[in-house]
Image (tube, rainbow, N blue to C red; front, side, top):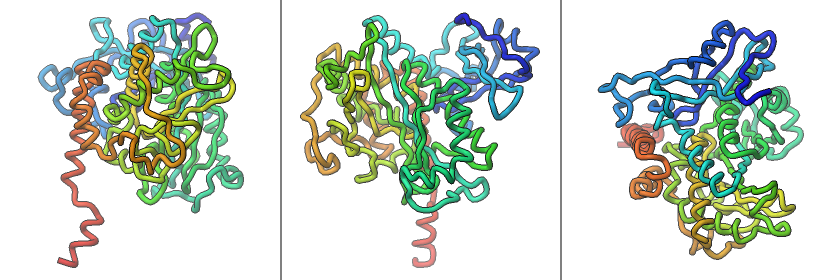
Length: 431
């Protein structure tokens, strides 16, 4: 198969073609197979507003696309060969790339943020590899609540109870070309985790975008609602997106020295740690995302780092040379993977170039640390840090930076204008 072979498998009548929006949600169109060759040659037109809408599809005037310029078109072209969906015979899926009507990249395409850092790494002779761990909830379609009860993390009986839906998620999504390593029940009723095998960074992010869409489609087909919302229930475990980073050159992991993290890996870690607080919005862009960031929830509240310790913000995993890596643990499962991976890799490469040393390693309970730098635990603080960061503006690009932060500020405003059920229940009859 050639690089540009987008031919359809036999028996396909419809192709799903989509790409990640401002929030990493896959959006696009369903295209008849009879029109596919034309799409491959000429692209498929849709509004640039796809990159300038929030998760509810609300629009607002932004610097790049607005009512003043009429929300003009761009085109999407297939980026991958279509793969048939096992649960929907005759339907295939392909991820797309965006191109302006001027045949140039669309400046606010989130994928460009990561693509620039991947190209930077390549110029340094490096290939960045990323493994993704995503937690999510499987809920009843009618009630929006878990159908099971109790915490059965890693429970094999609970896994068997969920196999009628988790089994297809593992096997059928794997059949779609996204290599699934494992699944397990997580730390709450209805919560599960699925791990995607590590791969080149841009491919890893693309896979996350497609994976989340396919999980929601498959869950619905089996009578469930899947949600990657960061904190669906305050009293229960939040859903995280843990990212595992390593850098490879000439087929070798350059972070590793006899199974231990070496100087280069430590400097990558130092760069990550330096920018971790000001890039919080890249991992959590909503008010809800920061509800995960509570002590003793397995979600970090500071930039502490150490070896194989789940109270840390940055966890180093050691073992065989191929397994040595750095894990960042604070992002929510709902975040845009292009922003998260792009800003992380930018920080890590800065660390390598500048020989940035991390703080002293933390052992034991990082939640109790008095020395580790805190990371934002609410959206307001995260926005303030990001607004002060010329570094983040350069990494994201001025238009994308402004657009993302405008969305964050809108989310904060929406939240501040609500009267919550708690307030009504507590105050209405008592004052």
